[in-house]
Length: 125
Image (cartoon, rainbow, N blue to C red; front, side, top):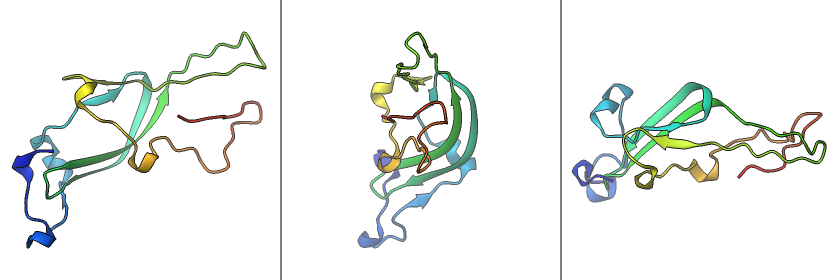
């Protein structure tokens, strides 16, 4: 939230309840430079950046990733595997940045998907 970006909302006599910032203007705003540390490949699909009347900035990026996930099969077929997604920040630390999925939907698994014929997907945290 940046007080320098505040403006009157519609209820306060202004014209907008949010302002869309075009992608070519994003560089003019400070943004956290968060990346996924263990991503092997990523594909940027869509993105949005809004500024709200109180100066809050909301940025959404849809990114498709392939992640590294070491697996250990010593207890096969009674094993459980945990695949972690690791985030980092180039210019600072993540204590100053909040990364979360909108409405709790950060990781999406298609409805009805329960793994392959050989493996079961038991949980997404």
